[in-house]
Image (cartoon, rainbow, N blue to C red; front, side, top):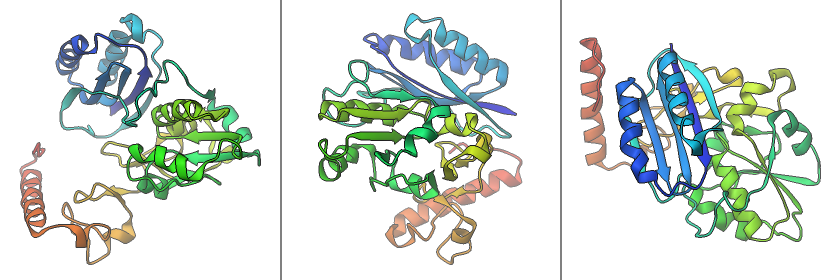
Length: 299
């Protein structure tokens, strides 16, 4: 089994460029794969490896003063969900694109998973899912609003057009691991909203901590690795992923004549160019050949 760990922390990190090569080398030396993002505002990412290597990874991070209290989430997978290890330098560890939005300076109220049901069951609370449209379609909390965003950069425009700080007095938000809703809370407070709450640890921590029989979650949760989706207890979900558009797909999608493994699905079939289709088919052929040889395609 492979241990998958998701983590993030908003923390002032002026020397983040110096950390990058050391962190990359440590992960490579321990056979850890995945992606980590570093920026002045902190760290974000998901990586996977053998359990003892992931424990060493967390100990390594926590040996740095800035990450001493770093929180993380863990789950298991039968296969390594990543092909390689990357540590990227970014302007933001989650891109909102609004200057001055910094959870290190201003942030909403954290709500523990165990207290989340009570908050979102209050009729005076408006519940907003800060994830993208396709993530919302896979699953969300009962009664949550879909902002219909294609990227997190679209969220400020949604707030501008749909939320009123005088009318919407109490707003609760959530996202996959907690990072987007934490930054969204900072943005909204800067816009004058008074009571802004966000789910600590995100949906993943809720699915880990809250028993199924008490849960207000409906559906599955999209994750950015080879598992595609997870359910309660962070068990692997039922969705696959289209390699043409990277969207999650159901068994029904896969029975469509517009579905071609590794190439297209009903969502993207009519949007792909002949060149894109040709390259995807060539790539899939190489994957299939690698499988027949008992190898893993790394392209």
